[in-house]
Length: 364
Image 1 (cartoon, rainbow, N blue to C red):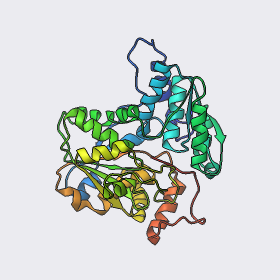
Image 2: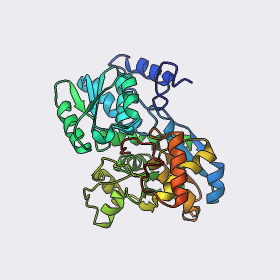
Image 3: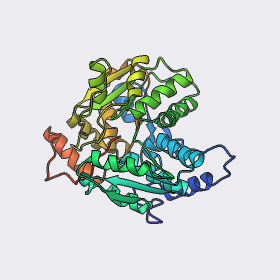
């Protein structure tokens, strides 16, 4: 109800969050720069705890403004650009969680936002969400590389700035706040392990930075990837050298990202990061199973970490307690969940025109 009172799409930030953020960010420039993100709850999952045989806690970042953890890092970068550099227009080439985070931040900060999409994004339901948040949506080229080049050019214009999807020190710093919240919520007691999903590596980089910052550097991190979105696993297997390639989410969408962040590779060498691959069909099945268990919808990229717990619970039993990052759900609908469940039951993750509701790529 709160999300739709002022005509905001349900995948956008709740109205009360945007109003509160706008008020805080309009305060004196001498005041400490506030964050766009919120402190999300840490909830014990009885179903996953029973499955694993030990306590499993959900870090509910799907409740962030814009629907994903991206509000942390991208929100921090956007706030810096506006408050410290005087930027009046934010530009993104993401038609997924990163673009939503930029649009939400732009509205909260009171500046213009431009999202550049390609032909493959024409059917993306988030395009209308961007517009309803006040963002300008431009179409450029046949694929993401074309749109990204245009977005970067626009970002070079006066008083404008291009906002990358994950690979920036301030984005990593913003994502590290997730671990600072865990430290506070757990009264300094480290979990047995942390389980998260990896696409381009921004979340992993931030979590590892946070672990070092709070003194939890020995906590194992399971970096979960679906079988066609395995940039980190490939790089770790080849001597931690990023190799550009197309990657796809479990539901078959080109994710735009071509190489894993170097920061993710660096932290995987420094800390106890364990790459874990999950099948596409298991990932799609986890979306529906998590909805049944927790009454929360997540997108496939978020469900990869959940699928690891559902399909390989014995792997995590040794750790005593588990924290899994529920990182986002702006790119899904009930129709999507039903379609993905059917495909998972068939044991195939191949895209089908018969049951794919259709939306553009993500990158998370």
